[in-house]
Image 1 (cartoon, rainbow, N blue to C red):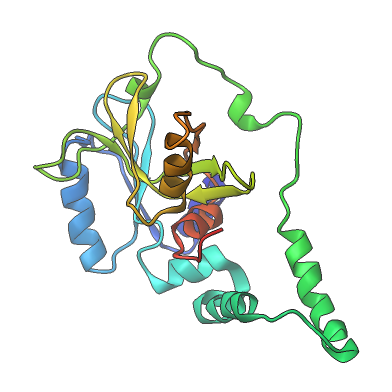
Image 2 (image 1 turned 135 degrees about the vertical axis):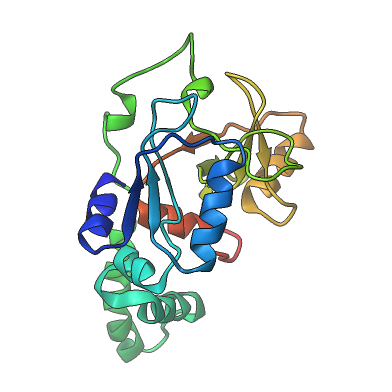
Length: 224
């Protein structure tokens, strides 16, 4: 994310705000005007009540989407995704040969398991946790503050297959959030399958990830 913000700055696609702003309604009001004018990404350096800066509108222009996706750009990437989703298992020898490059691309998508990561440098179990975040109350009739762009990671309890989705998290207190996943979301389906058995669903949430992963989590892909 930091590398991407640096890239946006070099490309003239980032505006940094040094004045103090309120995460309750004010940031949303500023963002609302900027995004409707196809303005830049915004980095608020001083958010009231938090020492953590807040970035918003990362994907609000075609140029920034192309920067996220790399050299291919939006249309080429969309076609690649369609090709993968529409692909049929190869049958003839020639079809299998033609499919080899796609297999190589798919293999590159497998996650790499590591023993530790930057997200584990600081572990908090007591004291301020969610209270540290510059969580926003976006709209006057919202029920409170929300974490608006988390990666929400769950596993299908039947297959063990991982899903990464984008679901707003309602901050209730320093240790608790609610999960806002609509009925058709994969995470919601995982939850329903375990609820029928009277079991709890384990969930991991990631904030501030690679923008490409954030974009991928928001894509409306088929189940699984």
